[in-house]
Image (spheres, rainbow, N blue to C red):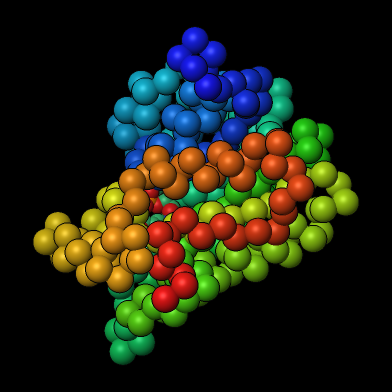
Length: 255
Ligand SMILES: NC(=O)c1ccc[n+]([C@@H]2O[C@H](COP(=O)([O-])OP(=O)(O)OC[C@H]3O[C@@H](n4cnc5c(N)ncnc54)[C@H](OP(=O)(O)O)[C@@H]3O)[C@@H](O)[C@H]2O)c1
């Protein structure tokens, strides 16, 4: 691909990306828009969403809490009203929590499942009629810890294990209808996710240093490196892959 003929794989297509104000979601929104898609970027806070929208004219944004009553349907309606179709749903918004069994509290469990499991399910449900029309694709964000144990983060790991089983089960349900469902499972990726979970900057840096030692490539990914694989899973040329969870983790899941 040269500078004179930029990649327009997704020209005329429409993508909804949740959690698009920061991190992997922002990088994914920008990458889709750069490859020609119309993007609706979703998150709760307007400021970071506006910053994402300023990065590419192909990005519109909607500030909404996807866990709110009726919100998933509203998100999908907004995209279809704007562009008349929907091709890709990227269920990226998510949160983690450091919580041992000894410290387990009901609210944290409920909030994690509401955001990481319930909201993506209702978004996929609302998107489905439009994805059937476009032979579209759902890409869910899992984690290395969706298929590896996470002491001190069991409930986060459990939500991502649920995401992986939703991915495989929906893929089978929809395979005959031309709708693909895949997941990207990043390893530790340099974003504000740990700060959003309440860790201090020092604890966050310590965590990344510890993970860098464990990762076979000794590299903490940037958000763009994960977004690259989200787009590859969305690419219509890859239409024979469905129900897959692709690890983007420098080999971490192998050790
Ligand atoms: N970074 C990593 O190391 C890593 C590793 C494996 C998997 N992942 C997964 O990758 C995904 C993206 O994470 P990230 O690292 O980019 O973290 P992040 O920067 O914290 O992104 C999470 C995004 O979700 C949005 N969000 C949170 N609650 C929401 C709600 N109720 N409604 C709408 N939007 C909401 C946040 O924006 P607002 O606060 O403005 O709503 C934020 O933009 C998550 O699913 C995460 O579990 C990350």
